[in-house]
Length: 138
Image 1 (cartoon, helix red, strand yellow):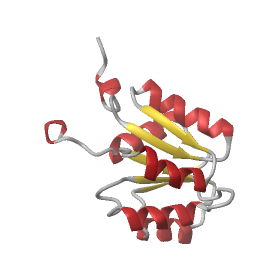
Image 2 (image 1 turned 135 degrees about the vertical axis):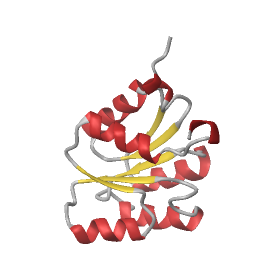
Image 3 (image 1 turned 90 degrees about the vertical axis):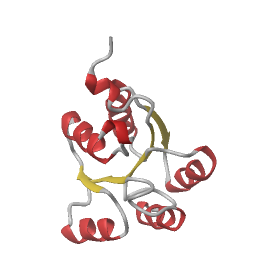
């Protein structure tokens, strides 16, 4: 028998664009423990290709400090493909603690802005809040 928390992310698809292997593992573990599936890409260019070729995703998690295509560029590209955050929730997960960066990301359509380091419970709760819900789940 599955618990209610497991059902929260059951069947949900996540894309995580992050260059730090430890953080990719951490976020992937949290999502899998909650029943979700995670596709991981190490840079912005791979993240864009995943969105275009392997979507749709229920939620995208983006680091701002990516090699090649920055998280800012990725967020801008997502905003040109989707109505953010209504059609695709994007959670920024970054070490950039500036309030200006937070405000800019939210103005560009990010659903939330999380600072590294972050605990598993806080991450899980944020992802649960930002996942699209079916009418029967509300």
